View 1: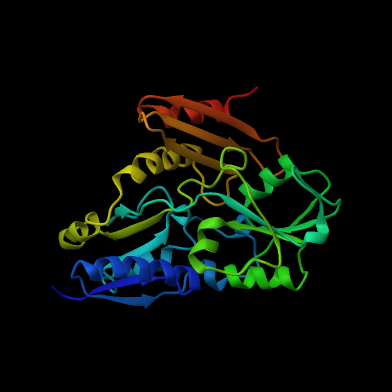
View 2: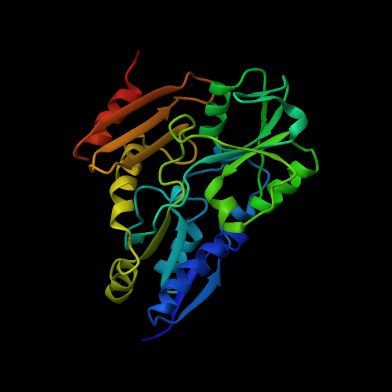
Length: 299
């Protein structure tokens, strides 16, 4: 079988993800070469996500390379992917889900108490995610939120330099990079309290729709159990008609009895009240639609 070219961003986390998937395929006898592609999100570092134009600013250039036949497949953080695939491309599969929680890294001198966690008035927290901004304002009083850009190690260095008193990152990325966080107070939010982005902690495999060989290969490392839940989360996102610009969280789990449990939150704007919804049912049929209707309904 011919060597397969994998397109990816060049950050440490993106390369970890690409190597993780490549290693799984190589064990199955598939020869893989990694090709780094810069995206708009990598090039524009001075703007917050809510100020970047369009959707898919961490994926578009990689998708263009796929469509041009320059790479055979791509690995993305699924939470960065638009819900609608460009014509000619498909999702070939998803990974098992890593820890979906968001993590707050804090300089210990900013803490008033650890349980329940309380921060000093005026604590400066770095995040460019509108979802995280709304959730932080919902949970804490008298904090200041400032945009932060850069890859995970860069953001942590900005915290070390006291550009910020605290920052918030996805636990999955911190775990994958095995970063020493011992100098900070580390607080992991429960996903039902601080609701993650749709598909947070999941990797998505993308390829050309016409490439049946690649689709068959990717199906061999696809997690159907994960897909059952991410399909619900991303359908909610699609119904909201948003991407990284939208203050939306959605987290779905199946219990031992195969019941679906969804936690979701939504605000129309960053400075608007946060609407929260919890819903459980025995099937995923119309589950996303019901959650969506409750999220956008007026109180």
